[in-house]
Length: 401
Figure 1: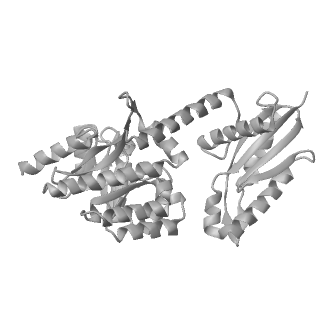
Figure 2: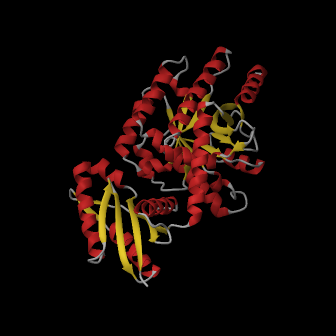
Figure 3: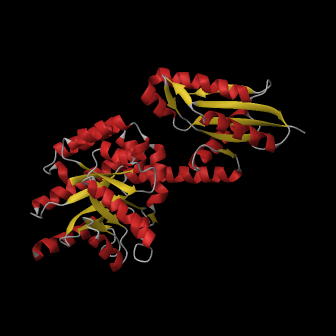
């Protein structure tokens, strides 16, 4: 009563090896990895490479699901050990999806596609993991496809809209600018939350179109305010690592600024800490290229991920956004207050301006003022609002002076 399994294996961060060691180094790593995998397989198992860093393993005559789990754990472990490439240590991890014959498919195509789906499930669950195919994955994949299809239409029909959340200067208590946020309202008026459509946009490459829309909307608003004689404000646009690594996208930003009447320093690009995981030299070069046009950079969600202070010195960052999770208990909990103060001090010592986000009450606002944060944003002051509401607000403020 034995079973047959198809394992779909994909490396998680192989691109980084190619970036740092060149394709020859990447190939060398793949060859060494295949030796390690073969070492774990039996005579009757079959290993095939089907794409750049994608492999399929056919495991026949296995006694139980447990044996397959043991094999997957052994594979994950052996692959994640250090590789020496060009005399330097390199690390990769892998994600494995498993489809069983005959319950998960009887044709090679259906088994491969279901194992592939399970592999993506492993990737989405933090990588360096394995997952078995199950029916729910298909429903989930179909739902993702539906959203993707609707999102493509929404982008073409201009159903996406930008909302602005004001940023307040803590010493002058004035609005200094805003963060540009994406909102999607369907034709029927239903709102699709960003945490649902942004990950899909990132995985399908649609994020670049959304990013272009955000940049062009921000610039045209800044030009409109300039014509009205409103004192210059700064708008911050969030970019994903996918957009930021795309040279065409960077050229698009530069062209948009050059063809506009605004000065580049009115634009802030917000990046999350995931930039630390990428090729630092390349990131730094791209950032300096944009800096040449005045663009500033904010590091979002600082302290939540792989913060490394050395990168803060390497990369030309201007603003540090302290995440609301660090500010939530500063009033009641000494430890939270100590951590928040530590992040704020580090930012100030590196000459960065601190933006406190997610402010929801007067006490937290007082705390970030007292610790000399430069700016704050949050529901306590203003919720994100449509751009015309924001325009009315700043008109009122500029006339009040």
